[in-house]
Length: 244
Length: 244
DNA sequence: CGGGGGGTTGACTGATGTCAAAACAGGTGG
DNA sequence: CCACCTGTTTTGACATCAGTCAACCCCCCG
Image (cartoon, rainbow over all chains, first blue to last red; front, side, top):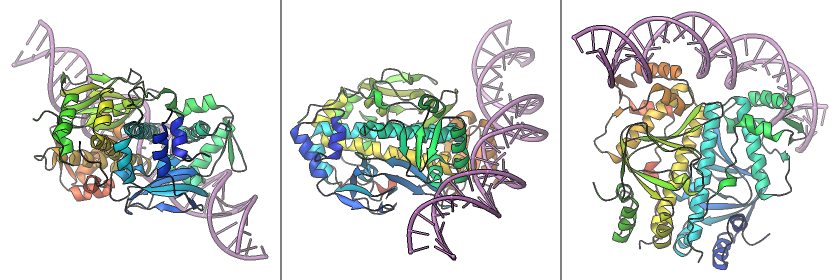
């Protein structure tokens, strides 16, 4: 693995200059290993740090005042997480590992020099933020306007596509690290109903379930009922500043 | 009104330098007036432009493949909209006016020089994007985990707070420019059920409705059932680069 | 062996959607 | 000023999807 996991991800979009790569590596110089279930930040904690995921899965969630939970997003290796901490002095969401993980924390003040010295990286940070925003609007439409079956399908397709994006060995199988309770908290359903919907998807021949894994049998059909739109195919980087 | 509406909004956060203000004004040098119902960009159109709202309300939405609509966000004066266009070559969402409006379009390539010459503005763009991302996660939690009554309440509180944020004359009354159909598309409900929920809120003494306006009678109670969190109180700008 | 967490299933409940009709409002043309 | 038209709001009756509650299973782990 190279010096920076996040750099590796960005290299899929542009070729970084040595100085840019160096700046990113500096952000990742102190990796930390975490056990499953570790809370990285809790909602309303001081929001001093941002993190890059080197390995493992994490998720972000909020707790509502009746105690229910909404899972906001799954975070996979190579992602910059907790970036909302840049805007607030208290963390707006909880970050927690879904399995053993390695993450690289850095103080948000480190972003100052990145923005000062590397305008192209700044623009890439901005673009990544926008892409994530759009991913959230896709989920908003999923929760607001589609059936329980579609929402579960959307979660599965989304994970599959994102895993494949940065691990070329993934084809049609995902090791699901979420309980049905957690899938429910992500899709706005109850665990019981998630179970029913998984059974339906399975009976319809769209997925198979074996020992904690999900095998996608008919991805086009699954994507169709999920209302899935592949946003990654269409990134536009033509307006980026020159590398420094 | 000053040269730049967006600059005016940012000035509520920091004091801009002359050069910064100039750079923003250049983005707003060609205002355009639009009638109610004008589509600024349609989903999948070429995504060349970004816009600043000078006056009027707009909204963004997507259409799902069964024809239903999800309204993603309302856009009020002073906001930068269509910013997701920076990341993609095709627009991920439709932008449409909810009344007569004045907006300032500019080509996304103009952002290049902003990022190159004004690192602090770049950082502010990033922070604004993060704040919007969090606003979306709040809505995600609303749609995923709260009742119809709460969702309608959340919409009302959100509009009220945002109007007040940049128009000091607003106290407890909002001129609602949305039909109940549109409120439904924003909250993931049907128009009929929105109507029922508005009646309930009204009967509970939380709001009054008169000739297209909503008067909020008990804002704390409304905010409580809406699960409202005021994010604006807590912005953190300490890591920003120096002004140039 | 025993306990706990997660998955699975069935019976029932309840919130929200659907359909339909009527009242209402605003705009247009005669 | 009226008649009409169209879109919106309001209300009722009914249907359905998803939630609730409870039981049982399985598996892992102590």
